[in-house]
Amino acid sequence: MAVLALDTSAAVAVALVDDDGARLAARTATERRRHAESLAPLIAEVLAEAGLERTDLTAVVGGTGPAPFTGLRVGLVTARTLALSLGIDVLGVPSIDALAVQAVADLGLRPGDEVLAATDARRKEAYWARYRVVAHEGPHGVPVLETLHGPEVRKAAEVAAAQLDAPAEAGAHLAVVGEGAALYPEDLPPDDDAPLVPDATVLARVALARRAAGADLPTEPLYLRRPDVQEPAGAKRALPVKGGAA
Picture 1 (cartoon, rainbow, N blue to C red):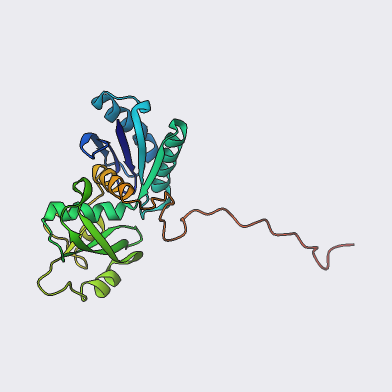
Picture 2 (picture 1 turned 180 degrees about the vertical axis):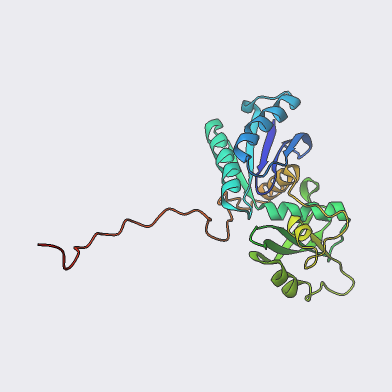
């Protein structure tokens, strides 16, 4: 049996893990403006590699962002629709949480260390959140973190001013990770070898660990601001023109 994880908060990332979190297959497409076209083929590829059918899935995990409106919506709608058609659970995990969890393993962080995760919000802004490492490894091999601040969206310079001047406790390291940091290194210099985008395998493992702990896993997207394209307001009522010809 297997769990499918989808994340479209940045790149399009798809992973298939077993019920213990072991990776069975994974694919990533770096195209940022063709999420809908990329996602379905990647799902088919990971299922084929693992020798499984959609009916073998026991749950679908969707990354909830934060991220811009259009791309994020594609992954979550796909996750919800697939889960509904199969009659299985759909589990939501903030993509930025998965990025921070990944950083603990990639950078060898220890309990007490902190992670400042920043992702691309466009408009010269970053989505960000700050975490403290509680345990390097917990259930399903997933590091345990507590959220200290965020997620929020702000200018990268504002994030730096508020967070880099508030260092971790004495002896602890503050790791700066994510694509938002890589885009604005003058404000948010990232750690060497820091992960840039969420890994769908990690997303799946976080979902499994949280479900086992009885946590609520909502799939509402974290947009944090209104979409660039909005429905127009209702049509204005025409008023008589004064002084018209008799």
